[in-house]
Length: 331
Ligand SMILES: NC(=O)c1ccc[n+]([C@@H]2O[C@H](COP(=O)([O-])OP(=O)(O)OC[C@H]3O[C@@H](n4cnc5c(N)ncnc54)[C@H](O)[C@@H]3O)[C@@H](O)[C@H]2O)c1
Ligand SMILES: [Zn+2]
Image 1: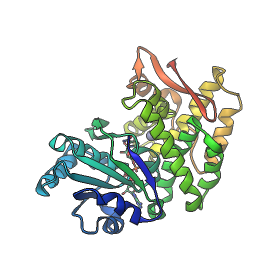
Image 2: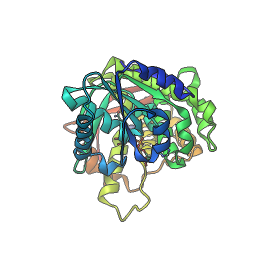
Image 3: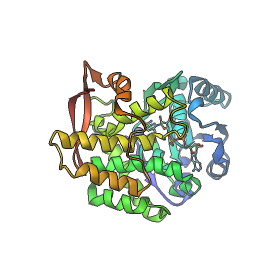
Image 4: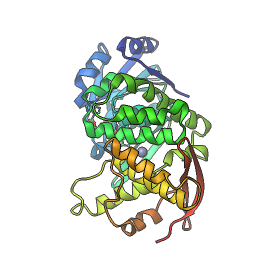
């Protein structure tokens, strides 16, 4: 499984890169500066790291560039950017010449704790998210927390939700409470560093047990059943909801809903949904559905994880403990 290295200095990254005969860099074009500091003598390709360009066409452009650079089995493709960039570059690396090595330098909080860990790569097919892809582990993920200094507040919140999700699944050394206090604006980046490392390592541990999502990896879907339904609703009702919720914001709402279903079933204390609601709101995350719940029904009933009307749903027992059970979607 991939190594995770976190450091405040790019010198440690250069050490990691020494062992590869050739390094090629694919980066989010907004990160010219950082890519320049990392890439130095290496050839690099900027890409537009937006969800609508997370397509096979961009993967093909990356593959053509790899070919023009004579990339081979000795080459390392280094992705510098958020989840869109690491998903695209990882996918291109996993199929070019039946697979070359790649590594990630995630630059968003979401990519540091989630997207750059675990080896899922891929792109969208028309309106279907992440429909094409591979599971292919990167050589390493190098986390450089200083990259977050330029990240917009909203993107920080997006990653904050995934970080809190991770600590609701596994809460070592009371990471959850620490994350809540650190994530309140203005964010203390120094204090955030060990929490990023902790969250990334929790994800790696879970993936190590279940690379291809046959069982234990499912816990990472906490909050995502309702989050995906909210995201679907937003796209089918664009005029009703002009202020689109981000993925992380939708996950926050989904986690509070998962807590309330858990309380209804007696899996957790009745006070948990209210506690999570207060916690998430304290770091600026929303907790209310943007629409009447019934309007989410079509998406919930089409969820990939559904068999019949029953879905593999992640319930919360307490902070640090979740359980996956079949759950019937009823409206
Ligand atoms: N492979 C996986 O396991 C996995 C897991 C979760 C999410 N994802 C994917 O990740 C994507 C979302 O990732 P994301 O939230 O990192 O999105 P992103 O890559 O789109 O980055 C978000 C925005 O921040 C900008 N940005 C990135 N780093 C910056 C920095 N340091 N300073 C200033 N701006 C910066 C980007 O240009 C973009 O506008 C989705 O496509 C999702 O499907 C993949
Ligand atoms: Zn997510």
